[in-house]
Length: 359
Image (cartoon, rainbow, N blue to C red; front, top):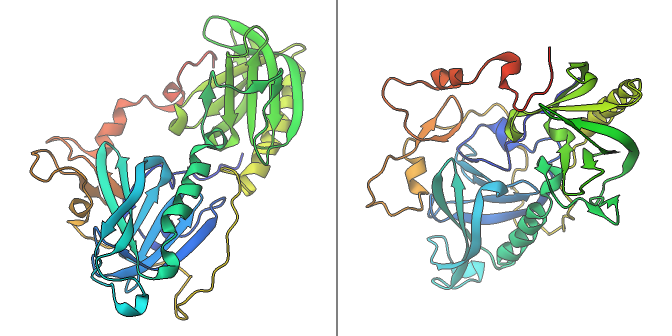
């Protein structure tokens, strides 16, 4: 079964990443592109291009794409305006020095708070806050597309509430959801985006599983007999979900249908409600849209400290940049390695949680 690349763009903050990670992934769409915009917090005086996608903010310096930011919306804690004075403010930009409004973002990634300030350098770009707030609101209200949900509000008048762009393919009664010690009878909904199971006894007992987080779909033995085993990604907990039907022969049809729909989803994933991209005349003729895929990330040891939101007087361990992971991490205790930390997790099938299946 073809696997979709793990979605990291919306839930990680990354600095000075390589060209391949700057390019939009499958299912990521460009909503707005603004130039010139200054990264006032970390690159005061330097102009760059700010791209707003459906998953993240991407800022790339004008002089070299090696200096860049990728801010996933899942990390954002607060967005507002902030009055700043940019080094680049000049009369020709029609924004007076000292009176500019900047985009102020507080975000958290791996326990560390960051502050970002983006200042539009032309009057055309002053709607930056309104644009980003609209995109972020759409992202925040569309988490069912991207997240495994348990006990969510999924039904209305005993019918599945379809998401924008979601199409129903099948509804199956008499499907048992298996746990370690019992089974619960319910209904299985199969759409182009996810599989949803709801209990016949209580509508609040349910699960919504996007194909984005499905690693495998197999038929195997359990203590309840033949069952459909659906393994989820580690990003959403690494669960092994079990389902059974009467007659058992239905399992093969369900498996084939889920595998087929998941393959279609992987070719054109839908991460949320589609947003329109308003075309604007670009005031810069020589602005390059293409990203150099071969350009490697730059090594700037001090880049993380430039964006820390905490008071620098507070004594604490500063995050460090991990070349192996490509993101900021807390300093490891003496004698520990990244490779060694992963050995705390069991190998093979032992990584799954709440596994009711027997090999």
